[in-house]
Image 1: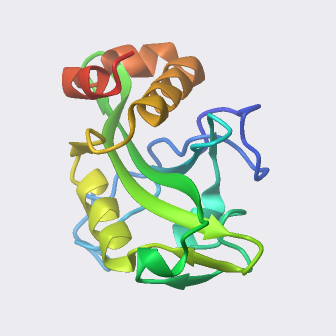
Image 2: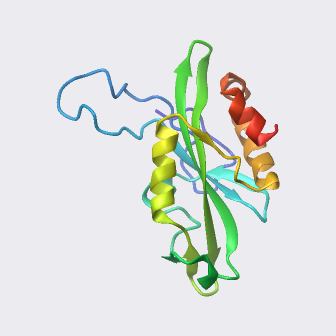
Amino acid sequence: MDLLNNNNNKAGGSGFNILGKDPVDHKGYGAGTLNLDNMSPVIVDVEAGEAYVDMGAMHARSQVEKGIKFLTNKEEVPNGKPYWLIWITVDHNAQGAYFAGVTACEMTVDREIRRGYKSLPEHVNKMDKSLKRHIMVDHMDENSKQVLGKFLKGFNEEMYLNSNQKLKDDLGV
């Protein structure tokens, strides 16, 4: 179930996914499998200073990634435009919905040569960490942290305020 429509969403569709059916409510078929219903990917365009939800990133098909062959050596894409792919998991606590897991992955794209850099193992590991309710954004550049913090706060201030203090401290908003 989508939380709400988001005008900042460049890729179309709706905003953050929030709490579909509880994945641990049953013991039948599929018990113990990962449920991505509560996760949304956010792209931070470092140079433009903007952030937006792009659900295509769940399958490496975000607008940024389309038509790009990704390499594992950053030096092979020296003119790559920097982006952050942020994995955001939403959950509920006593106060209500909140941003429970927020992790950031680096990515660069050079549209001219149709090449980019990203570490698939890092992206998968950070997705897993977000699902496990970790906050891992302190390695981002300061401007991108500000952009992400303002985006999350602007998206739903109550959810932001309900979130872990570590997230607020790390983003500096």
